Amino acid sequence: MSFMLPPKPAHRQQQQQHPDKMNHISALDEPYPSPAALDQATTVHTQANFRIASRKLPILKSDPIDAMSARLGIPVPEMIFGDNLLSVTHVPTGWSIAFTAEPALDLVDKTGERMLRVAYAGEWSSSRERTSAGISEVVKPYDWSYTTSYRGTETETETATETPSGETRRTRRKLAHSPATPPIPLELLRRRDPILFHDEVVLYESELDDNGISVLTVKVRVMEHRMLLLCRLFMRLDNVLVRVRDTRVYVDFDTDLVIREYQAKEDSFANLKRNLLMDGLMPDAITVALRDANQVAHLLPVVEQVLESVSLRDS
Image (cartoon, rainbow, N blue to C red; front, top):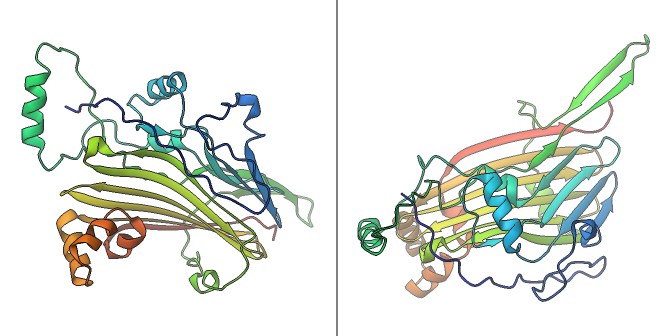
C-alpha cells in the first residue's frame, strides 16, 4: 500500500532571462491566466522551417490539480506545472513534438508492480499502521517515484504528392527506428555557435516524502543550423536507487531531419556513491553531486536505448 503525506509548500519556479521575446509568467503572485491567455504566455522562436514554443506558468491551483488526478487515476506530484510546455513544430507539414506534464504522468505505473520501497520501509510502514488505526480508506498503489518513459507527444502528419505518371503518393511523417538512422552529431553540437534561443521548463517535481527527488525538466538551445532539446527525468530514492531518463530531440535546420534518442540509465544508490568516491570526490562533494543529475548521469549504466528519426523534407 502507498501513502501520500500532506504536500509541502510550493516553491517558486526560477525565472530565466532571455535577451528578447520574454513573455513568461513565473512568480506565484502574478495573475493566473485563463485558458484563452495561454498563447499570450507562450514564447515562440522561428528558425528555418521550425517553430519552437515554450511556456512557463505557476504551479497549478487546487481545482486543476484535482481534475488532473481524476483523469490520471493517481495523485500528482507536490509541484505540478500542468500548463508548462516546450514544443517543436515543422511548419510546412504540421508535424510536431510537444512536452507537457500530464501525458508524462500518464506513463507512470498505476498498478504498483514497479513501486519502489524506501530504505526504511518496514519501520515506516509499521509506524503508518499505528497512526492510521481506524482509517479504512485504501490508497490505490502506483509508482510514487513518478518514473516515466515519456518521450514527448508526437503529432504525425501525412503529405500527398503527385508523381510524374499522375498518381498520388502519400508519405507518412512519423519518428521511427531504422538501421539508417544516424546518431545525434555530438561533434556539431560541441561547436561554439551562437545560441539564438534557449529555455528550460519544469514539468513536475516531487520530494518523494523527503526520501529523495523526482523531477522532470525540458530544456532547449537553438543555433543557426541546428537545435537540441533534452527532456530529463532525474529520480533519486535515497539509499535505494538513482535513475536518469533522457530524451534528446535533434533538428537539422538545413535538411529538416529530426532525430530522437531515448536513453534510460540507473544504478543502486550504493554503487553510485562508490563510483563518485572513486572519482576522487570527498563526502561533502558526493552529497552535492547526488542532488545534480549532470554530475551523476555519466556514471549510470545504460539499461535501454532507442534511436528514431523522421525526414520532413520532400524528396
